[in-house]
Length: 231
Ligand SMILES: Cc1cc2nc3c(=O)[nH]c(=O)nc-3n(C[C@H](O)[C@H](O)[C@H](O)COP(=O)(O)OP(=O)(O)OC[C@H]3O[C@@H](n4cnc5c(N)ncnc54)[C@H](O)[C@@H]3O)c2cc1C
Image 1: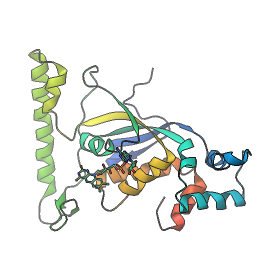
Image 2: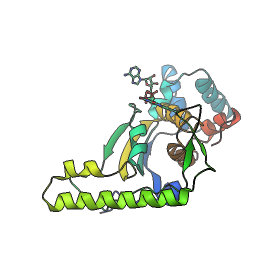
Image 3: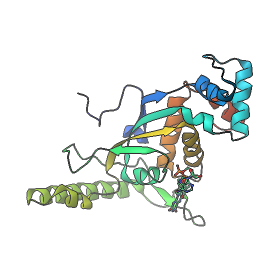
């Protein structure tokens, strides 16, 4: 049996190789979207020609979104706790996560490759820093993670339950979860999270998801590329 903490074959690494997102499963193709749009005419096709591509573009352009809900993806995601917090705000996904109450998997912490500075005007933004030594600060973060893990183990050794002991583990702890979402809501997620307004870390995952799904929805990707997006 494969452990969930191991990336699936089809995955993209992010965050300097510490995180990953993998495609576990998917349902439907671009032909499914077109067939769903044409259900009212009672006609089905299993290929996509130039006329179909025009219809696909029309559907996206005019936010005729329901046909895209017939295409569904399941991803496996390995990310820091704080990224998981942002991700789970997307209510149109279905989630399941490895539980620290039931498992004894190795605890691992995200080590940021560099530290960014707080942007002065926009409190939601960060900027490249030149006025602090991030090597020293990153080392202090390592020490803090090691200390929190030591305390966690001390609490377990003393007989404290896992569900309370985990409270001392830092926001940089890596977690693994499955997320399932339809294409319409995934496109919404990608718009919000592959954006300069989103945190760099979650943006890495959005970019990786685009790489994973592009071969499955090439004309949808092409449409967004034609609007200036990078896929
Ligand atoms: C850059 C950025 C910064 C953010 N900062 C903050 C912050 O500071 N604080 C904070 O709390 N959140 C913040 N968020 C989270 C944000 O408010 C949304 O919760 C998150 O982006 C999910 O978006 P969504 O609701 O559109 O997605 P989903 O939950 O996936 O929903 C998709 C769409 O379905 C519809 N929908 C879903 N549920 C409902 C519902 N119950 N009622 C009506 N319509 C519904 C809506 O049209 C919605 O847009 C931030 C998000 C981003 C991208």
